Image (cartoon, rainbow, N blue to C red; front, side, top):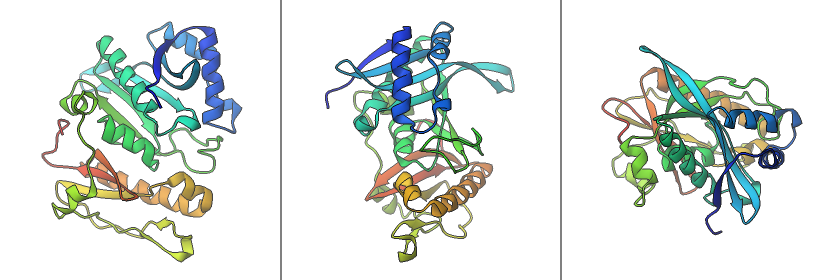
Length: 288
């Protein structure tokens, strides 16, 4: 599709369109729809809603507002990116990247250098966008961040989330958002370096061909590690809900263990129908 038209949304009519789009993105729970008056209040107080349009149809939005984070030197301002939604018909078409790039420009204009948001770490589409394409990093795992959620995408599973850090003035982000963007990593990049995942994932007839998490994983060692997740967790959950729960609790243990040992998620690989997080330790920096 042609590049979407990106606009700031400010009017009550704009926000009513965002309400309607939320219902298409997160079906099944009217109480989770953020109302127009909340968006209006946010944009009148330093936040903003950015919309993506195909001709005159709103097909995506991103919403965020100023926040504070605790540091050893006291509270520090940041931008909290709370929601991004893309109409199901326009997923995987570059709309999300265009919206986040516009957000990057707006927040830098405000004089801030840090954006945070949360996402489900088992969703490989989101991981590929957030980590590989945008250059966000993560070392924070939040259990049941939003309690019991009732929409069609989240109902029935603990709402565990990564909180990612997007340091928008760093070289790693410039390399991904610039005109000559860095090429995504492939599995060959790691196999040539003789780097293998620290646990093995196998599909079996008992799971209908879906990958099953192992019962245990090896201790994390070295500067780099690969952690595999299902390539299509939503489809897996629809096919076998019990298996989806197993993946939730296994991945929770993996990432909490890794983060406690000083690892940080610095990249994501989607290749050959498989999905892997890249965990870095030691001399790794935000400039990768």
